Length: 83
Length: 161
Image 1 (cartoon, rainbow over the protein chains, first blue to last red):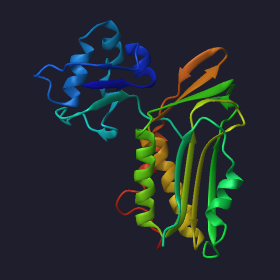
Image 2 (cartoon, helix red, strand yellow):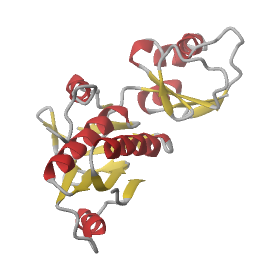
Image 3 (cartoon, rainbow over the protein chains, first blue to last red):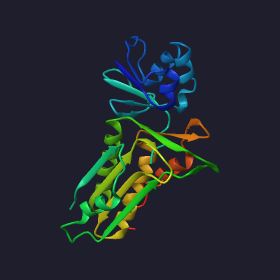
């Protein structure tokens, strides 16, 4: 599965995207954030406060309860500040 | 009746007058054209800034804006909508975003332009980084922007008001 990171999530993780095999036990977007936070210091820093991080599956906003199954691309980013 | 819809994400500056002309030329049914231009201010919290850098999520940014343009067209009788959002490094005084709505009367055009800006700020995937005194920091989202979006939920303003 492709993961993408934007803004300070990207900076903290240290890369804009990556392809990852998600463990079978990870069912929701929220669980994916918890699992990512366990992957090392930079991930722990990026996902230390998952409540402030927004997610999108295949370019549409989703809530942390959304299932990851079937997703092509999951993105994580801070609240948006455009306009 | 609906008119042309343009949604563009681009690095280059835009020409608001030329975009306005595209929405109104060759027709006489448009009675109101509202233009909102968001401009990069030269100060942030009382301190001068060197520039803003806008990052976006290509593909999703267009999709989110298009989704809200469709919603605006369903809520108000619009005759054309143009939304252009820039990305990359933008200096004080330069334009960042353009929202333009055409309708037969001003109420719909004003309301739809405000609606689009409110959703653009909170749901289109753009992030601003501010350069100040040699330091770059990410701009934090404002709760006032979330509150602004809330007023368009059920029972919110309609063109008929």
